Amino acid sequence: MSPPAKRPGKSKKRYERVRATRHLSQLTKPLMDPLFRRQGFAKKEIVTRWADIVGVALAQSSRPEKISFPRHARQGGTLMVRVEGSFALELQHRQADVLERLNSYFGYQAVDKIVIRQGPLPRDHKARQEAALNLSEQDQKQIDSLVEDTNNDRLRQSLMEIGRQVKGKNR
Image 1 (cartoon, helix red, strand yellow):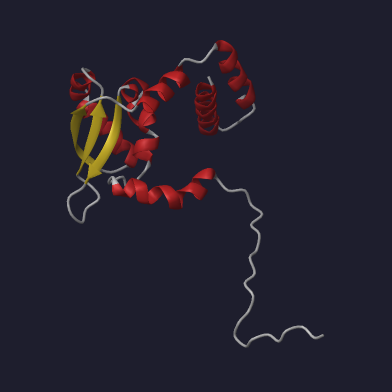
Image 2 (cartoon, one colour; image 1 turned 30 degrees about the horizontal axis):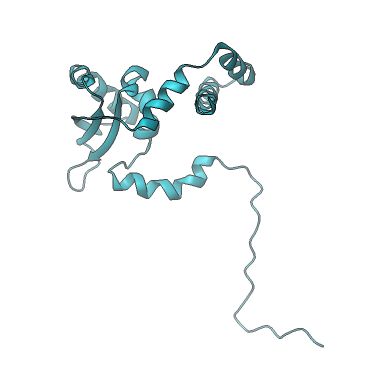
């Protein structure tokens, strides 16, 4: 019996295996970008790096919700931030500092104004922040020992933050 004849113009697709490691962010980018864009976050870093941008103290009681820009523009936007309880007054007083930090993080005048909405933060947001900050000495030493050989400071800090989040979540 002879093998089936090949149809002209039709070839079997060959998928080549990628042998390089890829960052998790590269794999999740196609999934997450549309979700962030729907809320006005052209750059998702404003959500994922909120604690790095505004500081841990502000990040514990606040969370960015939405950015709106003028039509056909990507600068001069309005950031809507949900703030827990009486912390709204604190954020209002520190608004100029937060705007400066946001714009220096992005490298251009991305946000001109902040709108503060008072209300409870989602439970998981606050629990994650608190769990990551309140690690036992043993957990912190374990994380430090795992990343101590890393030469790059930014990489070491990122790995430590991931370790804190993982250890905090497992508690």
